[in-house]
Image 1 (tube, rainbow, N blue to C red):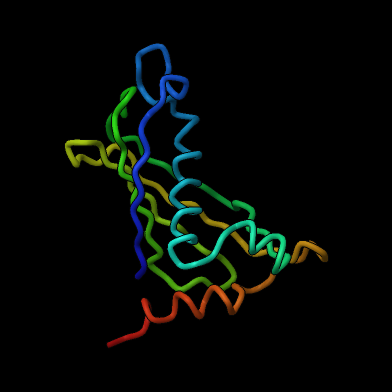
Image 2 (image 1 turned 30 degrees about the vertical axis):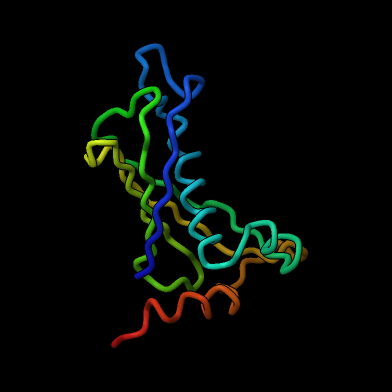
Length: 138
């Protein structure tokens, strides 16, 4: 398993009339978690798209709202991979408030697409090689 955490403060413009993080913005927090997880491995979406010509569209997303996040609250975004990517990569998301209480959880499933042919492909070797040490049995 590989996990990474990053923090993000809820901005005023991301909230609804009640001062809660608007439910539609959770997908953006998930994206922050995914992007920063890949960056922690030494990869970027930009590099994957422009250098390797690999796109990663979202196939599905599930989310569960446990409690609200509030304006100006510092949110900890925990992203984990519980399985080595093959045809798909599934990011498990957990968002925690400043009291370390779970506020939201979910999964985002993406596939790998060759940017030129637009065909789905297996997880690229440059990604699986970076992840392999975290999934090897000891």
